[in-house]
Image 1: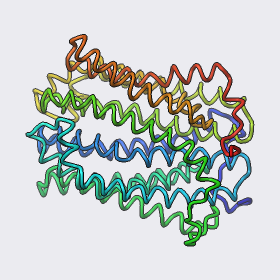
Image 2: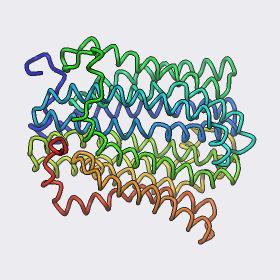
Image 3: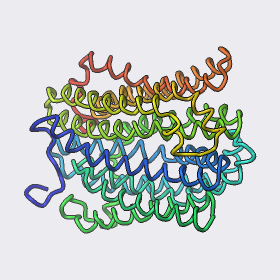
Length: 457
């Protein structure tokens, strides 16, 4: 994989700010388009169907997110390990890992699809879906479930490319999906009047095109990234599967714990009715905007840290964390000012329902806490994930997802008598947990002594 014919980018030399910005820019644009991709459903349905449809898309989106916990955990683990393989010059192992990722993740997608098709009614009932929105939510969840394999596939291909230092092509794939989703959303929902089914169908078709194009891209460049697409190359290789699972399971649990705990807290919010559910859904979309920047620099930072650790260039790590924290902070301040001084304009992007907008004004302080979490956690996630610390990932999952989000939300909402505000704040404060755990880990310096997970047997 040497020479000009390679997709691998060396991120262990040169200016840290320049490389981080260069690598993170396409990730940010990808995330922005992904947010547009997800937010378009909310806006179109909110304007065309009303608060019932808005509530349904909010609930359906959270269910769909929790179904992707395997894709998120394993693909993120695969990205880190690929980066460390490359930093250490172990290119033969990259090929084995790619085949293992394909087989494991696409098989998991099929299993999760079947489970959701069988259990969707029970899931919607368990989370207290308002009866007025139940049919809409069911249409949305069932349709999106059919496209689950495309979500898993896109995350898989993107993780492979990002692990090699390529963030540009994943952006191109999601760009096409976002544009297609926007056009089809307007056509199916606003013109044809298909409601939440139309919004979900537009999402699935966009995901399908994105995954198929990314797969074709990899196949046409198979010699450049060292994977031949022969049947025997897709076998699960024990040598790379062990570290993948060792790092991937805590990342899966982290993703699942956060998604599950949010769904659990939202089940209490949903009991307050359609308006409360709709406001919570809008709040989630707003936090996603800051999350676009956060995720971009978290992913870029993790890749750069993983390569630096693989090459044992530890002095680059503090610089990566510092630059990420500064940029995330600037973005959060801008969004906070917009939310405080122009709240009706911000919340009005999603709905014109006066009842929803009136309750949304109560959500402003909660949104500010969510924005703060989106600033504080990405640099520490970069360090924890980039160093491949599976135990610390599990610790974050348990504290963030279970102890703080569920525990604090129940305490504030039920014991302290804050009601819906308590559930909102419990979820918001949980987002700051990774900063404190990661901060202690950074100050301890133990990440310098881990060497690389790829050397573990």
